[in-house]
Each structure stands twice: as structure tokens, then as C-alpha cells.
Image 1 (tube, helix red, strand yellow):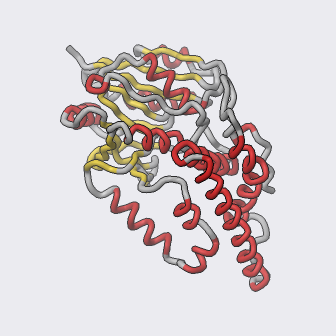
Image 2: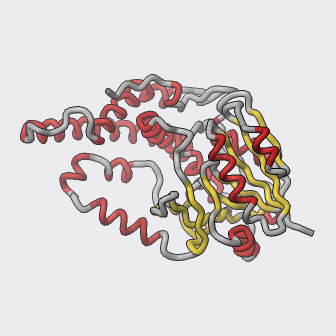
Image 3: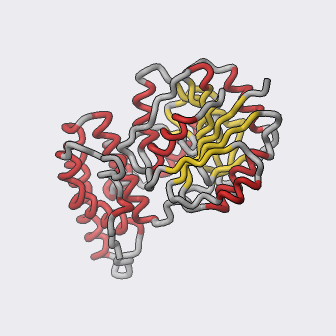
Length: 337
């Protein structure tokens, strides 16, 4: 009897990319019974084109843009496969026999294992597949101006650590959620993602939470997929703001409000120090860019987050309701110009 695979795809405004994703899976099906669960967050799934592919699929409409966490949770609720593949709409298979190779690897792993593989972009360039840290003091320090000044080689040393984490097959700290696989026949119940997250950070909180309950993450660099990355979030400013804000939510969920208060205080101090150091630099360099450099954009985003969310996140009793999210920068008018 053919093994059944359920593919959960959270969809938002990218019909051509969605079809490319599905076709890449079909081209590698190799006798598996495939089920596609497409969570429609923009109410415009190209139904006729998907039907023409002659696949078993189900469109699940959330009725609003439910984000990634709630979208995946809807898919998990309806998935009936022996194996669950959580795959971004802009990710696709391209190597021969990928599904067979993945299933063979997973069959040899213990239950409560989340599997991930090497991820590259369409040009063949590296994308981080294994994550080695969480939002917090250390990460905020790395991106501060004072660290840039005191430790100009930090990017090189950090890249070496990241590269080392991708060299060997085995159990790792955490995986990129663009492509995750779980053997449902061994675990029965897969933990849901936290519905308070809109985009980004949900995989961090999920990983921390499920690891406390005995789950592990397994990285396989011998298998590779391609991933465009952030096609559904084309506004770079809102994306960066959302990543920072979701990091605050991760800290709140995993460390508590007192720890988050200390972190936001640190975040604010870093913001002020960065502003002072940048001003001194501009006084020395008359030709320095005034507003378009990446550092200045980051400072403007930090200012927006501190003013808009600094107090709200610390004292809010409710982080989301049925159709809205407190932590959603995409609903905001962020003027960085």
C-alpha cells in the first residue's frame, strides 16, 4: 500500500509560484499517494489551474490573512498523511528522487523528530537552513553600531559558526520552517504553532516549546531544495520590522515579561548609542549617506517599534483575537523615507 504524504502550503498572492511548487512535487512523486492542503490567505488560489494538475487537494479558506502559524495549524487539523510536509509556497523540489530519499531518512529516525534539509535560492546560493541562536541580548548586540566599531570582523566569525552548523548531518538546535517534515505515524499528535504569531518567529517559539517535550530537530545536508524567500512579503521595511517585533513576542512567550522589559530597555540603550556613534561618524565624513543606508533604515525601524509597540507589548493582556494580531507590522503605515 502506497504511503500517504500530506503537503501543507500556506498560500498568499503568488499563483504562478504555487503552481511551480506543486509541479515540482508531482514530478518526484514516485508512487506515493499525495494530498495537498492549500490554506488560502488571500482568497485567490488559482483553482482551475490546480484542478488541471489532477491532484488530490483541498482549499482551506481562513476568511482573512491568518498568517503562517494559523495557516499551518489549519493544515495540521485536516492532514491525513503518514508524513506531514510543511513547505512554503515559494519552495520547490529539483533533485531526483527527493521524496524517496527523505522518507528513507525519516523512517530511520525516532518519533518526535522534525526533519529539514539544505536550502538554496534559485541561483544556487546558500540560505540558512539551521539556526543556532534565538532573539535576545546576544543577537541585538551583534547588530549594534558599537559592535561594528569594536569588532569589525564579527560578520566573518559569525559566518564561520553558521557554516560549521551546516556541514554535518545530524541533530541540530533548530531548522528553517520553509521546509519541515514529520512522520505522523510515529507521533500521532503534532504540536500546533502559537496562533499569536502572524509572520516570523513562530518557528522559534515552536521549537523551544516542543523541545521541552522531547522533540528533536534533524538536519540532512545531502538533500537540497530551492526556496525563493519572502515572495509574500515584498515590503522590505515592514518585513524587517515584523522580524524584530516577532522576536519580542518570542522573548515574551519563552522568557516572560520581566525579561522582555529588560530586553526592550537594552534595545533602547543600543538605539541611543547607535545614534550617537552614527552622528560622530557623519561629522567626520561629510559625504556619508544621510538617509538611504541600511544602518539608518534599521534605526528608523527601531524608533517606530519603540514608539508604537514598546509599552503595548509589555502590558497587553491579549496578543491576538479571532482575526487580528497585535504583532502585525503589515497593518501599519511605516514611513522610513
